[in-house]
Length: 209
Image 1 (cartoon, helix red, strand yellow):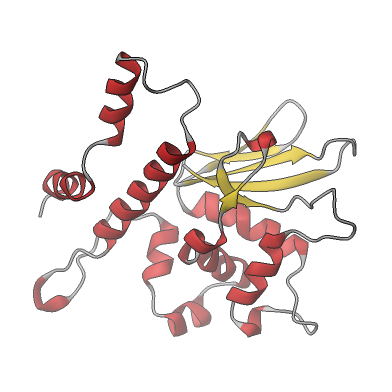
Image 2 (cartoon, rainbow, N blue to C red):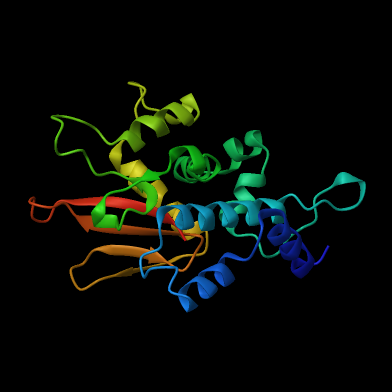
């Protein structure tokens, strides 16, 4: 099945092309400049489904075709788990875990991220000593051997894994005028943002594009 035929089948299955839906909606004044939550969720789910369909294409005798269009992150995710453990470093293995469990890990972020869906290391300022939920969830997902002696993941390796997700999915790093790091251009994008009221303290966010 060609990529065009596959895309057509996916569009038919879910009821239309979201780009065309958005274009038609704007033409009649039905889609605001800031898309509603249902539309953002629809786009994210469609992109996830489209990638999944592409990855599951089967060749002769049930063997998967080699798809040169897959990102490094997607290729890592398709590896046998034992092979990943033998060949990949700790950071890349955590990055793969984030990618494979993205639907469960992502949440609706606040106004600072335009209420997009993603993961963030920002703490809840209204709750004393409240850690990022992302850290807790990630520690429950990764293999135990990736945790330290206390059963935890350090913030440093979580940050590195978030950057790896963006880089391995096709992104390239750059720095803004304030020296904050951003990785864009891939399936995921990574940003460093200043925590309100704390000066130079940064938190990290990861979005699906």
